[in-house]
Amino acid sequence: METVIPRPSWDEFFLAIATVYSSRGTCDRLRTACVFVKNKRIVGAGYNGSVSGLTTCDESGHLIIDNHCMRTLHGEDNAKSNTISGLDGATAYIIATPCHVCVKRMLQDGIKRIVYVGTYNNGQGKDLIFDFCKEKDASLEQWTDDPEKVAAIFGKIFRRLQGDGGIFRELDLSKFLFHNNGMETGKLIIFEGGEKVGKSTQVERLAGFLLGRGYDIFVTKEPGGGMADLRQKIMVLDKKDPELAMKELALFIEDREIHYREKILLALVQKKIVICDRGPASTLAYQGYGRGLDLEEIRKQNRFATRQRCADLTILLNLPANEFLKRIARDHEAETNRFESEKPAFHKKVRRGFLAEAKLDLGHWFALDARKTKDELALEIQQEVTKKLGL
Image 1 (cartoon, helix red, strand yellow):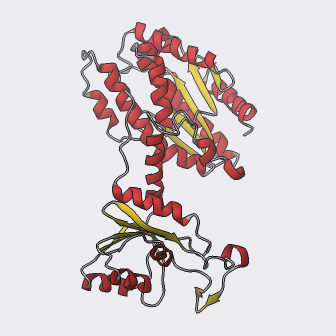
Image 2: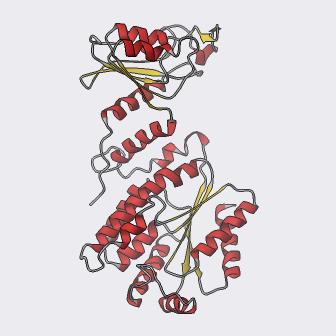
């Protein structure tokens, strides 16, 4: 069953609307907006900009007097002009700290709650807004001063609308969020393979190689890239539970969704080279080919978790199942992880799964014989990364 992203809270909902309104602001010193809400209904909204019909800051530059732009009306002023009902008992959602003049006007109109995001130095009188609200018994709340938390609201909205019934279902939003206006993202390289194939070693080797070439690198891994306690949650699962595979899948997808949202996609926007030890293909190989879950359902959930951001290159270290058992014996490992302790038949299915996935997308996969020496593998990987990704 597909994970359902919850609806945004009312505060998140109206702050998102205020943020969208602010995109129409015409003063680039700070693009702001205000949305008035009463009984969960919008009764007024506006953004900062010039008087209708007059030239804007975007068009003619600022008109500065005493460090204030005289060309622009505040978002609160325009929202008040656009109101369709009284404001007594209403809530104001505002982008950036409201100035003391706007706060006084809102209090005079009966606003009982002011919620704002971000921080702005409004100069003289800025400290009075808290005193005014307290004396008037009105609430003044800074929802956050971190723009990433505001962006996260839109992340939630977009993820929900990529789910069942959403307008963006099956749409690769990354093309629009990251690639418009000539903006280029970084590259995503994922290492895949069964147990004991040497992924961690080659991740380190490749990271060192690219760092030496001057690239900004972000190294990460799955599982556990999103949830610090994932290992503990996996370990307590009952191996005899008939729903084991489904429970594993749910945990891995939850971990991946957080991992991509909070780390991988952000690093890519920052134009970093992301090198990840394991990724979506491991879930297909282990829970799909290995445990027998429906492959298309796993693909569907992977698309949800990754925002459909596929790897630019997946490097498969291919090792026969019997060789994996030899490596465990050679390394004198008394303890094995949950998957290493599975029977050889399971590991053969996993290996076949990885190879099958590689054949489906030869342009973005590169398979190597993991029995080669570490140096041989590192050199081949470096050459392939250089050739296919131009790094």
